[in-house]
Image (cartoon, rainbow, N blue to C red):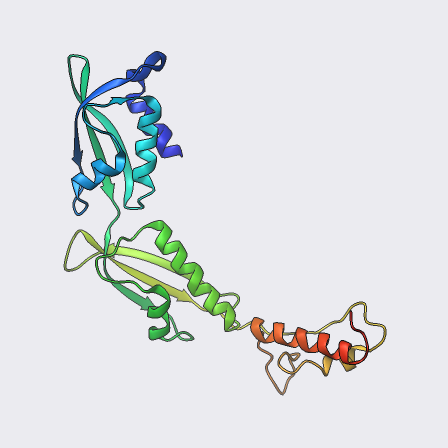
Length: 235
C-alpha cells in the first residue's frame, strides 16, 4: 500500500481535478527475465485508452500482486499533444542459484529439501523466504525444539550474477523439557492418579530426560479424558 501511494504521487499532477490522460504508448524497463508484453498485459493499461488516477493505482496493485518485483513505478516518458507515453519501470526479485544449509543437526537435508521444495531459477521473494522459515520452525516444534530459530542470508550467485545463493542458518537450541506436570480442578482423583494416565509426557527426573513433544502431549490429554469417561464422568 505504501509503495502504491508513493508511486502514484510521481504522476499525480497529471490527474488534477479528476481528469484522465490519453495513453499513446507503454514501454517496460528493468525486466531481465519477465516478458515485457506480460507486464503490459497484467497492468491493464491499454494503448489508446483513457487512464485515470484510480487506473494507475489499480495497475500498480496488479503488478505488485504478481510477487515478481521488489519495486514498480509508472513514469511519464513524454507528452505529445494531449497524449502521454508511459514507462512501467520494474525491479525484479532475484532468482535462485542454489540453497545452502548450515547448522541443521536435528533435521536431515532430505527432510528440509522436501519442506522447502526450492528449484534453481525460481523467484526469491521475502514472502517465499518467510513461508519457508515458518514451515521449518513448525517442523522443529514437532520435534520438541520450541526455541529453534532460523537466519536466512542471500549472497550473489557464483555462476550467474543475476541469481542468488540462499543460505539457511539453523539455530536449533536445546529441546524443551517438562519440568513439572500440574493439575487443577481435579477433585475425584488426585494428581498422582492422573499423572499415571500420561503415557508419553513425563516429568524431568535425574534418571531420565523429559522431552516435550506437542503431538504426544495432545495424545496424552485424550488419555486423561478417556480415563474420566471410563470412570463415569461422561462430560
